[in-house]
Length: 454
Image (cartoon, rainbow, N blue to C red; front, side):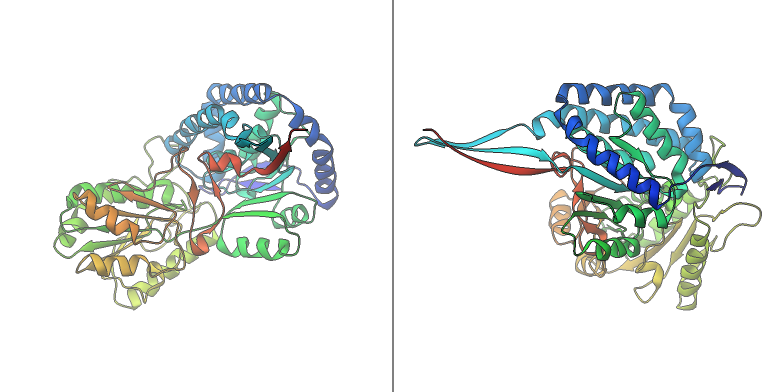
C-alpha cells in the first residue's frame, strides 16, 4: 500500500498490507492469546500502559511529524493531539481497576448477589484518521486494560500512526498476539468483519457505519458506531459577540474542520448577528493556510482528496440558493489538497451546508429571531453529536440545552472532549459510547452471581 502526503502529493512510504488470509491468522492468534491476557493481574496490565505512555512522551516529536506527514494535520495541532492523549491515558490508568471491580449488591438470608465484569473477548476496532491517537486509544487502551485482545485496523489514511501505536504497545509489554494491527483499506475491514469477534467498535462516516451494521446484523455481536455530526451552536442576544466569534471560529476551523465535533452550523440572534459575523470574519482572516509542517500553519491539508469536491458542491449549492460567500469557496491551486476557510451567511435549511456534514473549513451562519427558533433549527437534523449555547445566563443555557437532541452539550465552549465524560451520539451520530467510566465498562459484560450459603 502506498502512502501519500495530502499536503503535497509526495509518496511517503510503501507498506505491506493484509489480506483475507493474514487477517484470519491474526484473528485466530488473538483468540488463542486472549484468555492468558485476561488472567494477567490488572497491576501488570496497568504497568504496560504506563510504559506505553512514557514512550509517547519520549517519542512525541517524531510521532507528531509522522501524523502531520500522512494526515496533513498542522504540526502544532499534531503535538496538541499527542499531549492531549496523556490525560486520557491517565484517566484510564486511574479508573480501570475500580470500574471493573467485583460488586456486592445484596447480602441477606444466606444469599449473596454479586456482579463481576468479564472481558468481551476479541475486540475489533476500525478506527479513524482525523484524530488517530485519540480515537484509537479510546478503544484500544480500555479494551486491553479490561483483558481483551484487540484487532486494530487504523484508517488507511493513518496507517503509519496506527503501526506506531501498535509498536509502542508491544514494546511496553502487550503480547503481539493480543494487540494486532491490520493494514489496508475496505477489503481488509470486510475481512475483519468476517472473523469470529466479540465486539466491533467503529469510528467514521455514517455510510460506512450502516454497512458495518448490516454486515453484523445476524451475528449478535456487540456493536458500537461513533459516526458524524452536524454540530450546531446558538449565540443568544446577551452573548458577547466578539468572545463567541473567536471561540466558534476556532471550533469550526481547528484541525482544518475535520473533526466529528467541529462546529458545523451557527445560529445567531438578530440583535448581535452583524457584530458576530464581523468578529468571526476578522478571526478567520488570521488563520494561516499552508504547509502543515510549518509551526505557524493553522489550516493544513484536507486528508482525503474526494472531500474537496464535497466542500465545493456545498458552497455552490448555498450560493445558488441565496447565501453570501465571504472568501474561499473553492480548492486552492497547486499540489496537495488545500481548501481555504470559507464562511457563508444568509443561509437556511434548504442548503446542504446546513444539513449534511462538511468535514472541512466551511461554516454557515444563520440569523434567528429568538430561542425557540434556534432550538427548532438545531434539532432539525438526523444527527445528534454535540450542540452548544453562548449566553451569560446559565439557567437559560441549561434550559435550552435540555431541549436539544445531542449526546454532548456545551455552554460557552465548543469542540471539547473530556476523558471523564461519556462520548455518545443521538440518531445518525451513532450508538454506544466511549470515555468516562462507562467507556471502560463497555469492553466488558456484567456477570451476575447468586450465591446461597449451605
